[in-house]
Image (cartoon, rainbow, N blue to C red; front, top):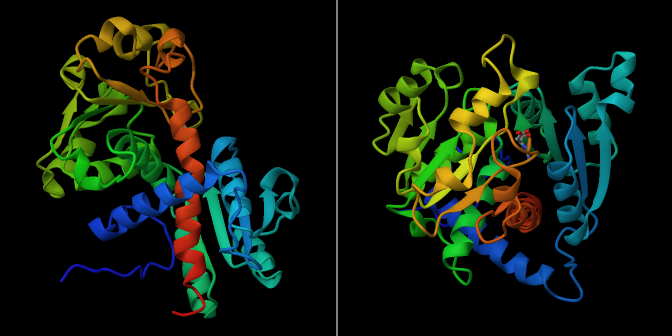
Length: 333
Ligand code: NCD
């Protein structure tokens, strides 16, 4: 029998998300989207709870989005930036987390440049026997579940704003283009989009989409609907949605590209290129964007085609839904 209650205490990855969980997030985010359109945009759901944003890596939209989401749910928020914290004096990550625990934090939203840090803190909280929930806001190249879910919500609510659900993507063709190798956004999206029944086409130069990556996902994981291309054209052919990704220069340890100009020529999204897609194609980007590299400026700014601003708006409602699920049930589990 399919699971019909929310049992997840931490949100660390989408790899084991169920259809029930995807749809619960989509439906709840739609309700919060409605709340956000009202004159009074606040609900008392997390009144008295503390949400700490522990960002050990730079962020603009994810951090602000979690902060406003927590505030709309009436939680108290704490913000931390590693550059101005006691970590500069040698404090460890776990000790920083325990300091926030001692201040009464209920939910820790964690971003770190290394994969596995939110998981390690969640494990530590569980070992201590405290009911603190951890939400992964992006760990290294591993996962960025709230971004994967907001991308899913952006697409599904465009198709059916009144009833967004994962089944709406069945049979749709979605291209993910760019620095797949270093992208946690791509990894989380691969889980959610393949779970939806969409056909997912990854496209990047071989240095950013190594054969082992494709083989691992395609063969080891048995994905039937995941395709990889070292040219952009086959990925774009008849695509319904195209997600383009930033070149993550901060994670590149060697020269993986001849030049940004050549990358744009071969993989940049332009009006001319998207003619190969469906006429109704929409373009997504998690941000921050390097204009003129992964996408041309004019295409990015066209609200008829670009969903980039919708993604940012959706992010608040989706993060409210995630905080709601891990925050409101915690005292009863
Ligand atoms: C992404 C991230 O941090 O992984 N951005 C985001 O969260 N909005 C993608 C990126 O940095 O390119």
